[in-house]
Image (cartoon, rainbow, N blue to C red):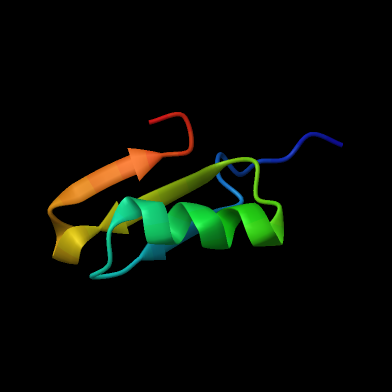
Length: 47
């Protein structure tokens, strides 16, 4: 059955994207959005 969700997880933090990327790598998320730098940046795993 196809997933109805676009992302596996969305993480929001005041930290930078490199810190969040390492967390996502540990949990094995394939589709994720990172809201970082106190909301100043929004990125996905592809950049």
